[in-house]
Length: 550
Image 1: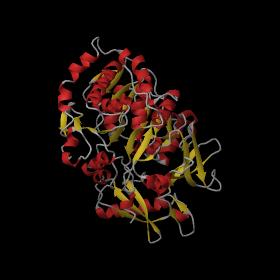
Image 2: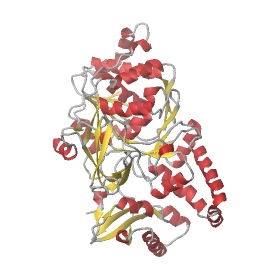
Image 3: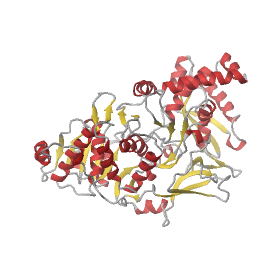
Image 4: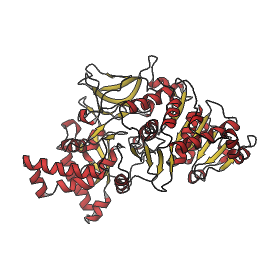
């Protein structure tokens, strides 16, 4: 396989004049040639301050053009990038920077103001992602002086100007670590996932060969680029083929997102389930639940007309020019999935994890099997640890080119999930069809064993409950051998309808009875317990279950 950095050397040369990056909020734009020039400037800085290949460079801030430049400059230089979610708390950010042994830190000013410089043990200098200025340096390396002289030295290095022929990126072997991505696991422990050039290139080359993005296509990046999912398919893959990426640079609420979609008209939409689930619950469900509409949808010929109209509205809302919507990062609510499939909306559900950088399985939307998470990728293998993998759930284990090298400086954690033959225990339970299609049920750590020996997957119950009236989010836990649903109410709907506290309790009892009507006898929820606040989540928006299952 082609060396990871060389993919971008080729792309930037071939796409020199094309638009590469635009910030939706500021409208700042760079062509591929401009991007390559900014990267070359940082390469020269790295060189003059003595940064070696394989050294760690941390990048922490909101998505921006500067964030992309810092990331791409690091990996094309042959250094190891450590992307850190800006939503991590300052203590965790400091820990990750120190644990990774980062020599340089690029950081947003709003994050930096909460960091104690003296607690950064290995960092030589801290550079601002907002204005490229020096925020901090330790005595010795003279980074400030090198920054001041950088443009003069750049002109001296390239007296005839920096052109496409000047691009030459690292030839570092793909077996070497290129990125350390720290997970924000729901178990409360953050581990540094070591991704090699092969892991990253495996994802990117699959995206290129599948034509998820293509030359001059438009992409709207709204997932955090520090997350493996957004990084691989909102940044790395489009930059490898000459796409034009618009960075949203703000919180992707449905209102903000749909406005940006209408303006950008992306050719591919990469999103997490929450976006589709909110649109379904807040806009589609109220419409199709009305008396006249429910009657119309019960008539065979009329239902197809109505579904066609809803499908067109949804497609137009997402810009109208996309090939498909790829859903990943978490399970998609089954009711939402069933509805989207029924109206023939062009979506597919993939499966992956940070430890695979991230992709494990994917199927184009026309071949998508409802309830599945796609087929295992070429170059990857998957087995299910059960006696009947096609019908009986077991833990999914994967092996292949996308599987991480291990957890940085954590051999015990690595040994727990990665065996000597290269099989990675995903921690996810599911089945596998003969053609390699995966069907996920839930996490092995959250599975509850009923008194009668049945496996209960709380995520499946929560998926049904979250579509019920007055439920914003839920968590199903075991209490004294019974299932209890913790519910954070949809207070916006409660206030809008003027429902009192006593009436809400009564409404929740109705919800519980309706929910149990959809569940197997061994899955019955005995009680709904209201909680006053949203569930605490990781920066990647996964509920910290361990806080509620004690």
